[in-house]
Image 1 (cartoon, rainbow, N blue to C red):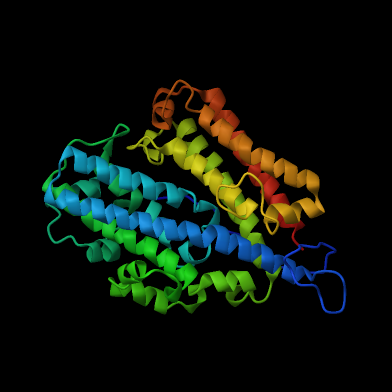
Image 2 (image 1 turned 90 degrees about the vertical axis):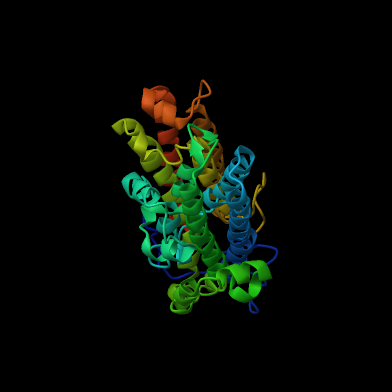
Length: 388
């Protein structure tokens, strides 16, 4: 199963700090912006500019996977398989760019979407058993409800679509049926993540309709008020945060530290050190290094307060850290870029990470990337410690 690190909340009490962000209202009795208003402005930028748009893009990309599968059901041609593989790849990118915020609705304490959508290694024997039975009776509903996480989600659909870094040239009817059911389960998880964050009234009619296709998905959200409209709860430090903006703010840096540590220690170091290609994430598509890079990009987006920025937003975690400790902010930004560079270097010689692990090559580059990710995690933990 996927190995992930728990998000730690810092439940300290917020205190006033002499930091001014132009978009925050000033305290009525002073010329200093209240620290809670500063935190609220940062959280709003983070949630509205990064988290919710990422889940929106993920849910929409998952729907494109269904469209591609409809064509496959009619004709499992090589061209249609390639289109389905391309749709998988597009959705995968958005998921990996969400991994700096694997808390709240997607967490184990929420709806466990992370495990449901992204567990690996696969249970290949169980997958083969479904296929050997011609996927008889398998539906999206039964896949979502009854199948283990290791036989649905991104990695099972990847296995059905890819071999050795390329889209497959043919699929059996059973494989198409399994792919369709597993994709529907994945779509509902993506829709659940988006609706739980944004609120059902704030998503498009298409997404709302997909979310309501599966009554058990709807019941899961309706039965857990803690994670309904979670964007508003995080922005206002309500619900589980109990009024602590420190706890809410810490989600940004803790989420980044968690995935940085996971990329270095679990996704890169462990399979290489143990010579286990089956531990390599996304190894059927040879997309592993892109996955890891996108994980680091998710940290950058969270820290900068926007998607694809070269300069942090005025109301961002970066700006907050810079106002307190400019050296730390500079180090974090530089370390993010260093991680991206060193992860790419693992593929020196145009190698996939699968090949790197299989052939035990590029060890120096692997070690450098692992160290870079560990250092980024350390720096982000310092960021958490600076929130008070």
